Image 1 (cartoon, rainbow, N blue to C red):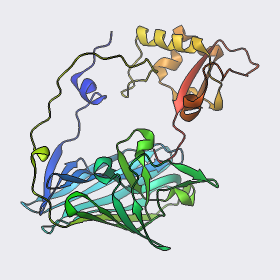
Image 2 (image 1 turned 180 degrees about the vertical axis):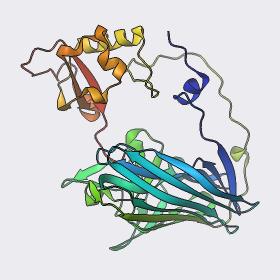
Image 3 (image 1 turned 45 degrees about the horizontal axis):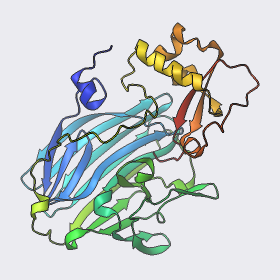
Image 4 (image 1 turned 90 degrees about the vertical axis):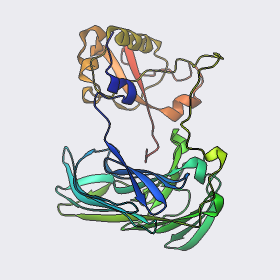
Length: 364
């Protein structure tokens, strides 16, 4: 059996996590995680879960960036961080300068200013903001859109991701500013520049947040960037009001997890591959072989090419993949299917099928 390193056990990959640093802007605090800003708080109240820049190619692959911090000025009640970032993959090359600043008055601003080094197609390039669902669900909001002011309440229950007339529909129209009424009489005022921003309920995909993102999905995708195409955006958050006094339920005492009595067992739903790309063990290969023998789901969309699988899995002679089918299955279809109802209709003789569930809703 493969022995996992401590990093793999804790973080899923065999490398240490990025160093973090707590920053303060007046009464606001935040955690600098690499070049992402996390857990923006007013006293004990979480206002923003995460601020980051996403580069997504035309297939919705996330293209990671390599960054270099060029300036870090941290004071007792303010901060400023500057950095350079470059994203490269296949024909995509995009570089940008970033700046994060927090003022003594409590305002926090994240800026990105980038340029395309090559011509490429993309679905999203720019800022994304995650909002904590416990603090935001059911709360009143007001947004400024090109059509005027809109208002309402963020959904208490999961807000379905609608798809209408060939486009994905956000919770409300794309906006340039947004205010959310929070607990204790506080109000988060969020301002976006450089693009219009939409919001989706990420609980549709089991993520515990709402997400405000650039490059509205309602415009369609992909988009074309040419050499020297310029993309610049900024996001500013400011909390208005005075935080309530911290109560016993808001204690900073570290939570404890105590094992209790076993009340049941989770079902064996499926399998996943390690993120570090390590070779499969004999036991993992046998589990995959058992999965293939079930052969109960109908192939959907495009065949899975060897390039999309780990080399260890595809090239292993013990799996005998020369007469196997490997296809993507939309996860929604599998969830709704009756057992045995999706039987392969292929006339080609197939000895095994590899079934992979793919989330079809975009923006994930």
